[in-house]
Image 1: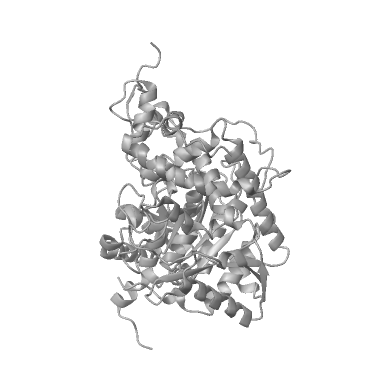
Image 2: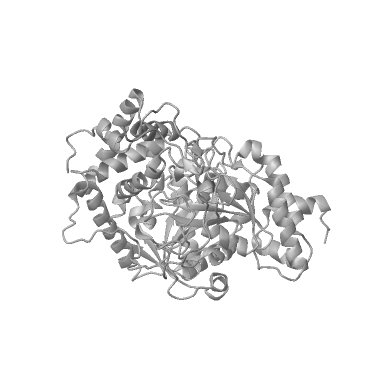
Length: 97
Length: 497
């Protein structure tokens, strides 16, 4: 388990698209090192041949019964939930130059 | 028999159970309007001290109450929940009400729809009441992580009510609702129930639809009730279960249950497992003595007490904080400043829009968990952390399955300590995480569990007993808990407010 290299907060925060102040990074760095240290005890467990468990009671092939058109929200309704909207559209900063 | 004065009778309405109140409503001794007004009056009397709610709408509640009375007058009552005020945790969608999850990220968001469990409560005629305080995005064990305010434990206002459903627990304890809904991912219903001296339960994973429950950790989250009695919890669970086409993880119980009937028909004696690992280090001596006394009570009733072992249970906290944070980092990615959440005014391109909005909108604990979750899923670390944790999760489930070949239910303390003081653990995340040591493995295994009041410490703080059932074994779980409750009077006791 790669526990010797400290968590690269800048890299992980970038992956998570999460702005952190310098003091937040410093504090988090210490707390997360502590927490990751607590995780080290998992390394010793023998998990050979054990299937990972993602769902408490595995259900498979849960299909929708056909695709039926029905009542839904209008574009206007959904757009007005956004912080900025105009003409039933969500306004965002320019993405493409 | 002395007649209670009108005002005395009214003032104790908020301490009554769904069972008592629905009987009074049916008999015409009480209207939903009177009951709802009593709840509103009580809330206004104590809320400045308890702060269980983020907000509430009296006019809306009274309107629902009037509609309930009109239905009843027309002979169209919808059942035992018709006209009963039920408080709702701020993480559950209620149409046209704020859905903030106690976060600044959703400060201005109003839900356009009802969660499926809320739809079911409306179909049962319940009065949907208020937005109850919680730890932000359900991350916490004390309700101190709310971006709005913290909630007090009604038994000691200097102490926390537990979390993340602290407002839901406190509201029932304080009489600000007859029952409430919460959510439980690692113990967020059961732990506050124990700390506030009320009943709280988490169903088998999949029994109650998660549609409309803001997702924290999708493989762990479940909705559940807080009530004064086990029977009330059974009534609420019955009303909310069912496979939902809007939640593909929801499951129909293999055998159609009748939880209230089970309380009457299942009288024991039972084979009850006591896991030795749950009584080792870290448990408060008063809690330990109390739970041992409860176990002795079951023994005195002819139950066989079986020493069981859950050898991987000491790994539950680290496994949980890998799995749950990983799932949370994925689920909270939708809060990006674009469509419905807080948007930073400081950003001028897409990436900084996301980063700054999220940096401004989320509190410390949420950020901590997003970072941790992102890390354990990231390239180079996924196998070592997340995949390994998911394998150990299966070992944790296997421990329970082995134990359940020998016993009908498992007894444990719900929380290792009674309610701690405000600020006592808020600077030490790991200490806070260890509050959930007895509840967390139950979520990992997808099992049902209930916390019932089992007494008080010397200083008057509530203690809770946890009963863990087999998957879809709520009937036995309820019956075991009900038997204990009925033989003691803890649910009769209320905090001095």
